[in-house]
Length: 281
Image (cartoon, rainbow, N blue to C red; front, side, top):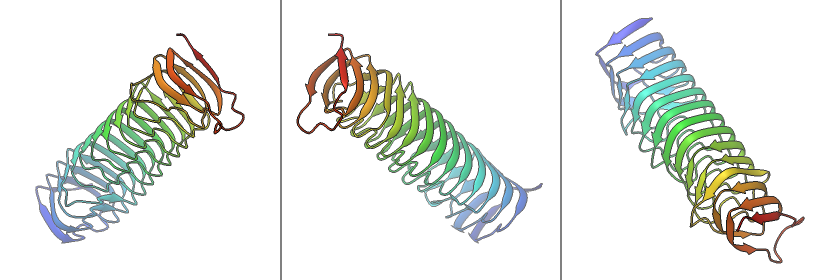
């Protein structure tokens, strides 16, 4: 593997189609596609300022690097990435990618990030300003994660999340086979139109959570004081270890809660309309 140390590049495609290359303390100034169509690349303590540095790249490691706001859309159409201890200030990162492993990464401007990606592992990552995060992605494992940004995880499949704090309106819409453990989920309209969403020991806040769900499971969860009008048109099995402000027209299944302030079953409830609701108070 060849090494480039303490150099600066700019302009169009300065290292286009390079293979087996290690970059140390290298700066890529304004320009485009610095490392396009490369393979087996290691970037350590590097700074990326230009657009689209890693496109169509196969097999690369990014460690202790910085992507400035000018490095937007930096990693697209690529595979087999390991990124660690990196600051990403650029939006629209990670598109159409396979096999990503991110650890100790901060993305404070994560708009439209991680779209159409698969086989993603995330640990100790923080994201904010993260509207439309993870759109149409699948096979995702997340642990020790903090997120602020709306419309996240829409249309995702096969997701497992542990120990997360997620502040997101419209999170988990249209998802399939998602399980969340030991997490705080804050934001209105959580999980609408999902299939096989499972929440275990989670704290749920925000109005109208978990409506229009199919095969929803809640185990040992708690609801906040603003989580009203829950479960409309959902089929579910819910074990809630707190009060619920109100439940409206669940379609089928069962709900157990410490107490429910209001149970609304009206003429709009959908068949089979046989949900069993039990409270301890």
